[in-house]
Image (cartoon, one colour):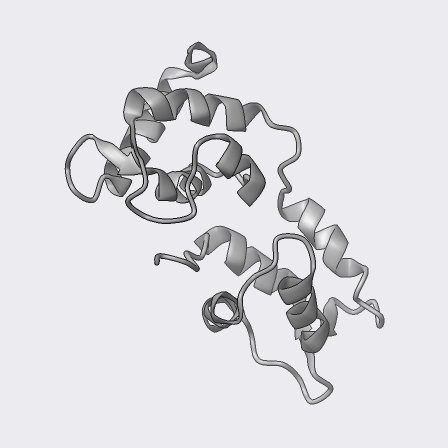
Length: 159
């Protein structure tokens, strides 16, 4: 599988892997697989990260680069990863005035209750890092929020 990767992709993967190798052991905690994949501009779901060997807690398992590379190659092939345009289309459903804004309360509810739900603390971190102030009607411009969130790849859970 890793044979499908170009040399430049392998180099990027090595760099990202080295960033997540906090202890200098040539391995990363399996908890960080999702973060490393996101740093490589992928957008895996939590379910996919779990299927690829990611763990929900630190210290349960370590992954060497030789194990990470096939994971990267496989996730790169996955078709069910959203991109900015996909997410933007979803948020447009909440744009009742068709002016590029949506109610902050609706975004809040969606992130807490739908799909891969965020915790209150995770939501606070995302809003703090990516949210523009709401207007007098409680609306926020959703495109800049989404762009900031995807460009920054906000790390919301380092427990």
